[in-house]
Amino acid sequence: MAVDLLLGLQWGDEGKGKIVDVLTKNYDVIARFQGGPNAGHTLEFDGIKHVLHTIPSGIFHDNAINLVGNGVVIDPVIFKKELDNLAKFDLDYKSKLLISRKAHLILPTHRLLDAASEASKGKAKIGSTLKGIGPTYMDKTGRNGIRVGDLEMDNWEEKYRALANKHQAMIDFYKAEIEFDLAEMEAQFFEAIEVLKELTFIDSEEYLFQAQKEGKSILAEGAQGSLLDIDFGTYPYVTSSNTTAAGACTGLGVAPSRIKEVFGIFKAYTTRVGSGPFPTELFDSYGETMGRVGREFGATTGRPRRCGWLDLVALKYAVQVNGVTQLMMMKGDVLSGFDKLKICTAYKYKGEDIAHLPYNIERENVQPVYTELKGWKEDLTTMRDPSEFPQELNDYIDFLEKELEVPIKIVSVGPDRTQTIHR
Ligand code: GDP
Ligand code: IMO
Ligand code: MG
Image (cartoon, rainbow, N blue to C red; front, side, top):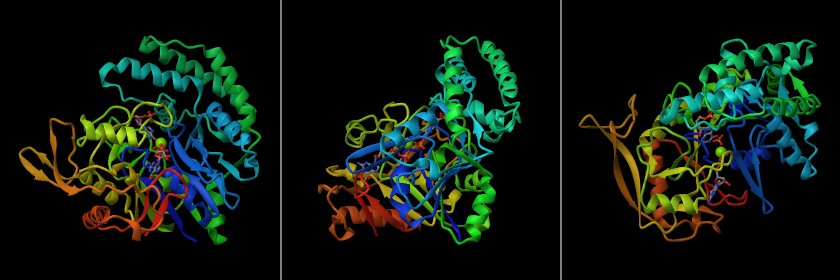
């Protein structure tokens, strides 16, 4: 059977976790393909909010195996915390959580390198979550990394020590003023490694290959968003992995010809956390309302998210790069009560209106050109069927479908599992 993909089309936090949880009942395997604990995926049901960082968002269902793929980077300390949280809910995760031997490990010194690198950049800092993501992927592509499979070898601690020593010299090079207690960080790390070792490590590409042969259905879960992609995002203000559709092939070992549906998730407006260009960013009461009503605070770092109008130029680009076949619009409820809604349909760039994303989208280069639609007053959060939608919301959806040329199949009207409307 084919593999479906689910990924974010903006700068992350689109609501991927919620939708993976909603869709899991239709799948046998949920597989995370990239990123690490820089992600924060929120699920809400039965009045409880769960935030997952590395563990796939299908973990609360009994029918599915949850796989952490080779493209993911794992911090054992954060992973252990996630497991401890699951244990509180009496969840038998051991029988349904698998980890790829080829996934790379985030070491304590990777986190320190992240902090030192950011501190040295001053105003030009990326606004990283400081989880060690960049340095870990650097060691992966530099062919120095330590992988989950290494934990099954006798000499892995020697490899660890050699790499950590090299990192310490690199940290010294930055001369950054960061405070840390490496001995304490390492103690936590080695304790967490023992917990990780109790889980099942597998050759995940082979597992997924067999699962496909047996007719099992697989959903690949992305992290971050398309505009944070290392190649196609707003470089250098991006993360260090391929967040777009191709990342699922390399991050899981699934052949491109096996991919069927590509579910693209976007918010009805735009948010971004961390630094970097954001053409439709708002600094007025509309932006303030989005942030307040949408509770726009990072699920990993708690930082306030920057808010702005929906950017169709950027969204179209993401739809194209990913080959999106179905769209899901999140957080429409947050826009209830807005007297007007603006959608950026072009950029003014070097005196001309352009409808594609140019190389540089810094504010001084591009000014958004907006189309204005009427807002709706109705509260959407109690609605459960598209027939209840106000006309203005239908107009908003129709406008987007026409522009993007892809159907919007799900409209989400609140954080809870039940606040999900299929069209
Ligand atoms: P992810 O990283 O893509 O999984 O998204 P996050 O969990 O970081 O951020 C999405 C936030 O919006 C979470 O707090 C969700 O509970 C919440 N959320 C998801 N869908 C909706 C929705 O339709 N309406 C509202 N109001 N909140 C939503
Ligand atoms: P989810 O999966 C939103 C952002 C950071 C920073 C940049 C680089 O929850 O959507 P990194 O820690 O990777 O070095 O940070 O990317 N970022 C995210 N923003 N959601 C995320 O994940 C993010 N993961 C990283 O804020 O700007
Ligand atoms: Mg998030």
